[in-house]
Amino acid sequence: MKNNNSILNESKKPGFNININAISFILGFFLIILSSFSSSAQKCTYNISVKNNIESVNKEGRIYFMELQNNSGDEIEVKLSVFNKNSEKNPDNTNTKNNVFLTANFLTEAGNDFEGKLVLKPYELINFQVKVTVPSGTPIERWNNLLVNAISDKCPSYSPSLTLYTFIPNPEEQ
Image (cartoon, rainbow, N blue to C red; front, side):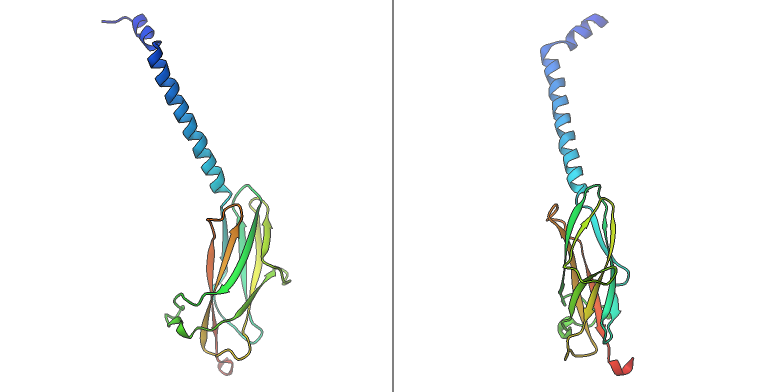
């Protein structure tokens, strides 16, 4: 049977110390890698939302009230875009082959035009609007699907989006 002194002496052998040092190095390396992934993922936490994404439009157009939320501790610049998608199912499950194209532009919360570029401070929430209008000659009783995207240069692989569904009713039935 070995005494306590011989166990302590065995733990001081060079091979044993190298293994502990190697394990410590590897664990430290993985912790650094994990923290860098965690901090870069934190920079990519922003969301876009809308109060109601299914509406009908009248002759003045339709305003969708939107929010962009920065959920990170970093300032981010987000570029918004909107385009006619018309490839998703319509809310009433009708085929999209008869969908129409509408025009859309971004407005500030106060209703002023802007180009779709927003700078958000850490944890800031910005309200904005998407105004949808019907071009002259557009057929009635049809749907339109607009895709709104938000992308930041800090996280090009992360791009939250949502679809706005707009119905063009018969104005004589309103």
